[in-house]
Length: 159
Image 1 (spheres, helix red, strand yellow):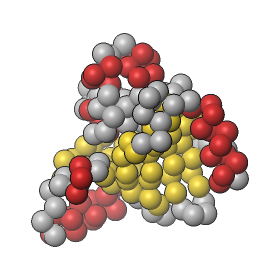
Image 2 (cartoon, one colour):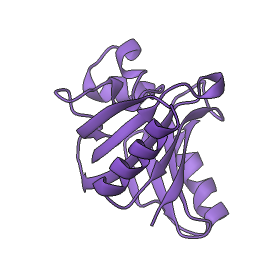
Image 3 (cartoon, one colour):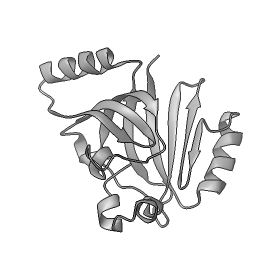
Image 4 (cartoon, one colour):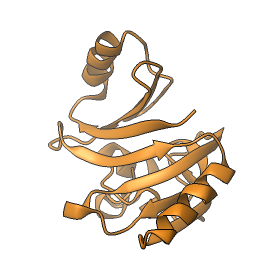
């Protein structure tokens, strides 16, 4: 199953989880410090919440979650055929998950779009050896900087 991903910055993760649990009638699929995600069946949506005080209500990044690496490859080939450039990020850890993905370049107004599949759950927000903290191409929460000991400026580029 493919579904749209919407990653939002929120001021308070607990308040946001409570609100979105009521709005979509389901609890989060994953909760970590400063982070939560919902796997919503109807409408098909992966809602990602990232605590980023002072940035609440703003878009962090967009994505399309696909079922497997073969689909990631097929979408990347299709987009390349249309002239869109991409940045490959395979076997990476980001957003508490091991992933194969790529980032689409050249979106109007600088919107960050990722096409990805989740390979496995992870206890780490990102992998220092495979692209972190720039793993997600968009701004991250200050809580991530605190968790990892990275300077806020460095962690600000991860989802």
